[in-house]
Length: 233
Image 1: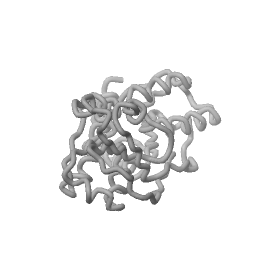
Image 2 (image 1 turned 90 degrees about the vertical axis):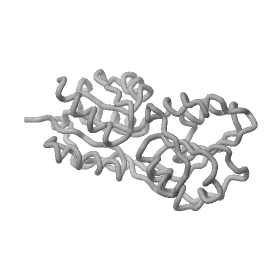
Image 3 (image 1 turned 180 degrees about the vertical axis):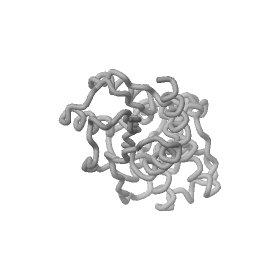
Image 4 (image 1 turned 135 degrees about the vertical axis):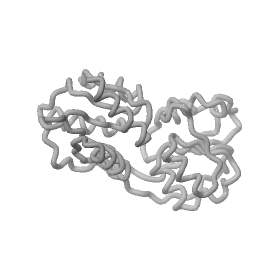
């Protein structure tokens, strides 16, 4: 029996990836562990010189809040092509890093050359400082703009013994999955596919022994990696 892929990321990404895998004949368990809820906030006091968008959720809520209207002419960075396409639909000048993750953003020249007087808005979810915010703090006038919050979802319809691979897109998601996996006596040697080396290292520290880095959160890239990974096994 072919191994099932547990798709854990939030919607709409979970459905997009699950549909691609199902069309290719892969068995799928679609059970996101995180839900997304928008939050209201006032515009930042300082106008931005650069806007960094860390997720497609942030991009959608940014447009819905109309915060973007005063920023049309300044550069934006999107964490990936899907996020960029949302912004570009409103004719916003948007660049994408070669590696579609936080590490890739930090390697962009425009980010490396930031000065302390430049104002950078980071569009993200509510919570502590992530990798991008932590790296930029002190190198510019950083303003985190939380536009949504992540909420834990009850995991339903997942039997650990029936899972062959786990696809994980965030550190919060990894933590929830580790808790579920341990309480359900899941096999920690089963492959987990994560979007960055940072999350891979965290997964290894939690006891997962076969963590693979996807290198991108883009649905097409994840699908292509899965096809190649399964063929190699």
